[in-house]
Length: 558
Image 1 (cartoon, rainbow, N blue to C red):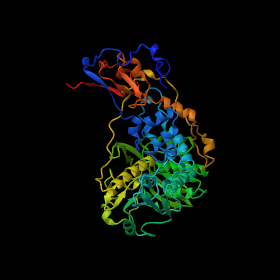
Image 2 (cartoon, rainbow, N blue to C red):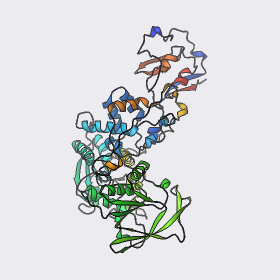
Image 3 (cartoon, helix red, strand yellow):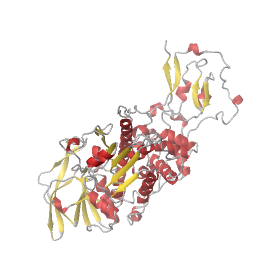
Image 4 (cartoon, rainbow, N blue to C red):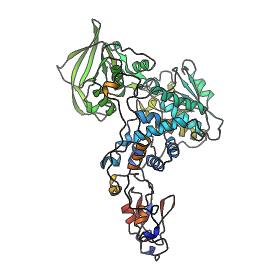
């Protein structure tokens, strides 16, 4: 909440000791510096892979204009109902408000807006289609990158067809992420909204088997590969064939499997898939244990998911590396070795080093490996692949060659859903440039964000952040399908929007108008300041007082 003196909206101008424009002499010639209104980048927008324009969205929420807020969100992320549930919320990590009290609950606001959008996506105005272009685009893969690209390309007026090898579209959203984190009806509603826009989805069609890849290239003006990374990496130890794949296990569960592969189950790995597997096993009444060769600090999994896994009662074996697997008396025996951490490696984490003579064994009913995934490119023509089997692609634009593009985990390796969504949007932009005969240019990187030093926090008062309610561990582990985190109310959403510092974006608070001693600030432009330099002496009070850091002082040109 911003605490300001009464503004001109709340009291007559005549009661304020502020001159109006033209009531004083023209003193602008005294000036060495002039105030300039700028729009800067907020940390939340900068840190978000989709670069969601959050201060602008929050402004609309504060004004009670939810539909306008929703439309701004859709410009950069078509699926906030999904990311508002499962995103690691990079946007909150460096929120300037966290240096004052607590970060704004951005993900909770995103979820609220996402559900608001989802309820209204069938209404006119939420997905207007541009003039039909008469050109066809084929997208192979219906995960978050493919669906995101399809949305933006269809809005541009292109005819879009998606090919999906599975029975249902959604990719990782449908078959990878457990339903307690992302209810499947949310994904189904989002897919239904896309088909309502005119996007055709051909499920159960495997390109490379049911359809020749070359035929797809010939039929469509542009083709996007967005097949994700579903191929489990090998650990490279004897007896590995006794282990299950983490993604295959999650896929089977999402298809209806309700029985664990055993009671005592080891999950090897420290990423998001391993944690999802372990927490899913817990809900299937198994006793999962996560084995990871580094410490908790180095785990790449989302930290809050690791915390929840510990709350769920899942056992962790850190600094533990399996080196052999064998079967004995119906059990899988894992021969393991203790590890210690050495110097930093290429990943930026400390390298795990085996401790000589520290071998020990653990026995389990089943073992699931989830140490990382890669794409299956065996069916893609060799001319589009490098020696390592990865796509030869410009990662900034998604350009592969000929009429072929690629996006998402296929080119980045396993990443977050929001990163895949952002990649799909960027590549849709490149495809549009290609089909229009324009030079394909990457998006311009954002400038560095506003730091808290550029914000006048004196105008804000401490206020506890809104927290979404969560099921306690003893209740949430009883159900695989019951969503463990709920949303927040409209009232709390509006409270959070008011808590936002609006870093680098004017929130039309009138403070510059109130404090200007020369009456040289005009707020007729929607409450945003404009300066009459005939009367402005360049004293800098407006810049010093600005709560958002959007008025800077520039030296006058001679």
